[in-house]
Length: 233
Image (cartoon, rainbow, N blue to C red):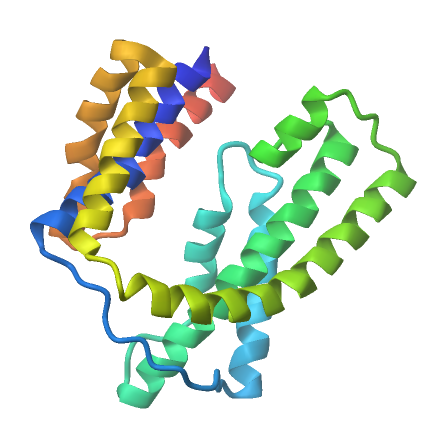
């Protein structure tokens, strides 16, 4: 079962490794300041277009996730020039990531309909329950995605304010430790000691990007390389 390998693998690479790094560096939640999201219209449009194009492109490729789409979209954003440009860059990244995720959800559905290949976990679940997609059903799903995206925009703003205030009341180190213990327990419970060993091996590998100052997305090679080798053999 691939889940016995993938669950502890990704939990170690992207979950536990970040939690342990936060514990070792004594990270804290910075003071939350509420302010308006201001971004020039040209940069907003660039973020939307670049993110949407990247998300649409990777939706057709096996093993390539919306995370990689976000990295591709970020290539259109210039490096820091001054403090104002840095602030705009950070906000544009948020816009492009949102565009990439939304486009990826839509085009993963279209890819399932056209080439009958699953390109995301949601599409795997959709296919596993035996739904036969047709043009009308795809259109219905796209309408639902658009509606949910609009609603989630307002929900994110509302709950973001609440969670920001709430999280400041917690001891961040204890919160990370609690999540780490819970994650470890879930890995052992669902994948056994074999999965736990994979989990332990993946953790130090997942910590390398933080100390080597490289992007964590490179760790996705653990999935991409086997898929490429499997495809060309």
